View 1 (cartoon, rainbow, N blue to C red):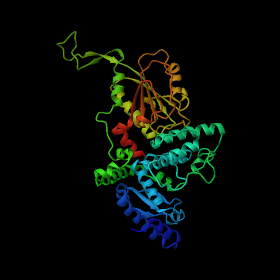
View 2: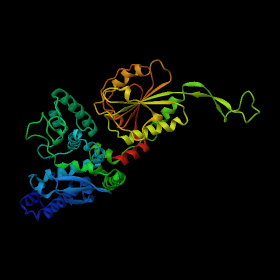
View 3: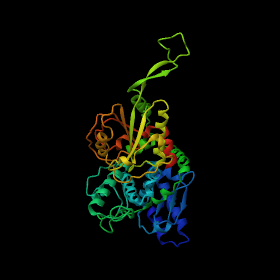
View 4: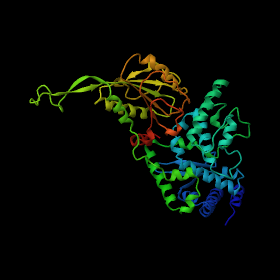
Length: 449
């Protein structure tokens, strides 16, 4: 078995024309080693298409119209002075990014300079907690806590770290009044005012390539990704599979709720509970003249006012919000409700509200500050004074404060774009539904990621 450390040494000492071949040989030897010692990673890596690149990072996942490809930079790899164990650790690191869909989940967020550095830190910390023999300056949850100066739990989903980093960044910018676009002291470049120069987390696998993913090809890449890991998982023995951490096993065998809670049914239920007079119905006999079939009967008409609050600081884009409002419009064909939409972030601005019937075809977001759910509840007494038959719908990614104080006894439905476990509110008033279980929402997200 060739020494992986020697492979890297030959790559570092090789001529420029020899490095692509030496890098490919180092990769092939690492895959053979992993097939023997860690079959899951070895089988995944053996199925990836490898190409040589010229970026600034040693490794990178690059999107194509059909798949994700592993890009190696021979020159930068040779400059790292990695051991063989560190080399395989970084290959495992890349596989876990792909397993947990980090390139697709954060492709849009990386296009925002203020969030690019946060994405890299959050995803790397989530991955590296499951790895050993990492190179120096590798970011883990423990080091993330040291950098932020606050407790950080181990082995959490990247969304949890991303939410915590966003809150830390907002607090730091407010206190220091920084004017940079990448977080405190250009966090997007990998540094912050809390980081000692020379000790900042390194960018060994280029995340910026993720943002080049085309929206129209997202479904094809996701299908390829699922097949890749399904084939790798089915080739493992029960013993080999049992040695994997629980989070990796869960990603390989996702569980789907048999009867997920349908938010549309919740709305129908709320819309059908408030009587508002009677209306003719040809499906009912006329009780006064039952023999005359041409006369309609009557049913109790229901009427409801829906106030929709859209979190403009969240992860939802214009297309996703338009889809949800379109679903509400379809319900209005059956239920004569009045829908008023209020954008909000840290505050609710009534001047920006609009009626759903007169909403613009292409929704333009106007917010961008931090999320504060209490602002919605503080505004309810002013926006809904003494009117019965109200229903409040909050569309959000779920990342805000932990505690809330209700102000008005109205039914509330929360629609989260993130999983229920990522919701920041400990005891949210009303009913909380995650759109992660909605097949139509998932299809929209695959088209927009």
